[in-house]
Image (cartoon, rainbow, N blue to C red; front, side, top):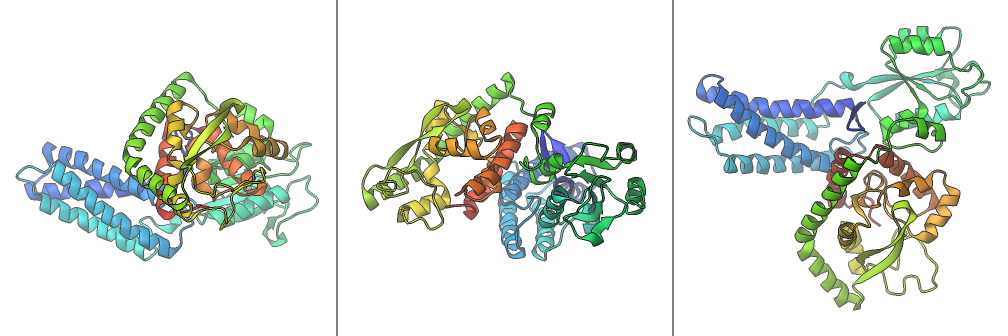
Length: 462
């Protein structure tokens, strides 16, 4: 994994981005060089400038389409459909850039566009047949789990279920472990030392997942030897943070949260986020105004007023504020006065409401809450006081999510489906804790790009 601005990216994703960008810039450079008969400063500057813009545009589209998600949970059919859409967007982006910034003689737009079309077509063919631009062997990371108990089993399952780029070598039995929760055939006995097992099996990373880490259960000298020889050694909490973008509640401790890095709430960061929120919300309101007018009209036609509904939510530092949304449910949705989560195929949702929820249109009025300062564009979703009281009692560390402003969208929203139970909320909290710990302007931009993909696909709508 590669850490950029406090956020972890799969190294294969970063190599894909760099190779794809290099192919675009390289194709444009070669085309210009062939037209002029040689490389020169004009050709290099033209290819770097225009090629850089093209690469940035298509990479943004690919991020929004989820083509760089790791782990990638898209089916082959979904990959093919999104690859075709990416190809069409690339054609539009390259044509637009060459139209706005046309090449000057002796260079010709047509020749340059043809070279770029050739590269894009090649990428489309590779993705369409389920291939990848990088060799599969390059991305395989061999992982050894130190431990055989319940925690080790959870790590092993997460690796096998979520990351095809990881090869699980096996489990190394801890000296204090008497029982195991993993398959016996995958356990390395202590007849060989940890160092010998790592060397013999070409291990790239060790995840320490012992149920008990006191009383000399860890061979510290051997783990240190492995690290000095270039082997990554991480604990279970760091594993989930790096690989799944979450703070796993079963693995984390108060000490890990206190003494680890993250949770930066500096003045500069706050000012940048505030400016980003105000400008972003104002621009989005202008762009969304026609859609909001149509939505308001349809709501009124179907069931009359009110068009909006206000509801108390918990915000920064536990402060109560009123969130505003388009009304997507019947007016008597909670006529008994008892708060309840929305469920799949909820009968309280109106026909117009179903469409708005699918496309997240009902959330647009919350942009006014962003301008007011009650919310941010990106952050944990605000919850109702009734549920917050319940969840704070039942879920450890739940209150941490209130240390920053709630958001219109968030890391949990793009990583997990709609939460309709305490179990779902527990899963989403693990992503919220990751965001609170690692939030930055860069992660906000990543989340906004992925939100576009969520809206376009309707993923997680309820």
